[in-house]
Amino acid sequence: MKLLEGKVAIVTGAARGIGEAVAIKFAEHGANVAFTFVSDSSKEKAAALEAKLTGLGIHARGYQSNAGDFAACETFVADVLKEFGTVDICVNNAGISKDNLLLRMTPGQFEEVIKVNLNSVFYMTKQIIKPMMKARSGSIINMSSVIGEMGNAGQSSYAASKAGVIGFTKSVAKELGSRNIRCNAIAPGFVETDMTSYLKEGEAADKYKAGIPLGRFASAEDIANVTLFLASDLSSYVTGQTISACGGLNI
Image (cartoon, rainbow, N blue to C red; front, top):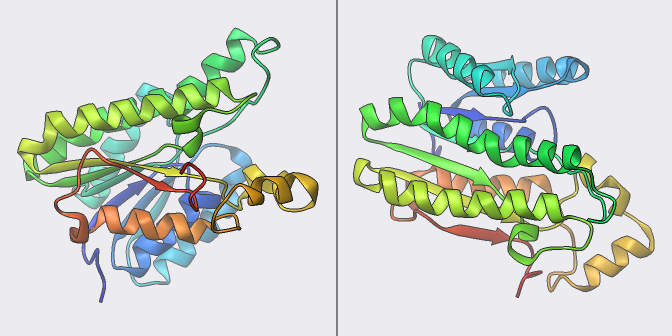
């Protein structure tokens, strides 16, 4: 059973990691997928992903676009609407981390994380709600983090940005619920991606896993499965919520 047959989904930051897994999962379930990547170095991976998605029998297109730039988001969504006709699902996944102790953190480092992780969610959501409101239907999924719920030493900028995503999600859900537009967040714990590759082995990995009741890090597909649930009609009565996909880390 394909849960997203004929839907059009946007996934930001999909050249790798969680975003890539979400794009593949959506395509497997019949969604047409427009995804973004930001750097020239990701062009080859983006092209490979586009080919893989197309090979699953859906329409897919990768766009080089910076989710942390309002004008770029405006152009991107306009291009998607021109090519795909509408937007049914938007996964705001683009994100970065610039970890540092507060004593050493510069204003520039803090502002860059807020811009990419939080501002981008506002920029993209502002653009995609117009076609969703017209259709009186839509699912917006914002990628937060368990760090936004718990905090973590050396990650004040990341925690602030991801906590902001949760507050933004709840507010949007209240604003748009009457139009049958749902907005939810996912708060992953430690996920095996390029961003956390330094934690895969050794004492640091063992330390973090010891604090996770399920005893392991998540795979990107684990998070993609939660995203699929929130994108599909299986979650038609779920909005304004944050699902902590963290293996029990925040219990």
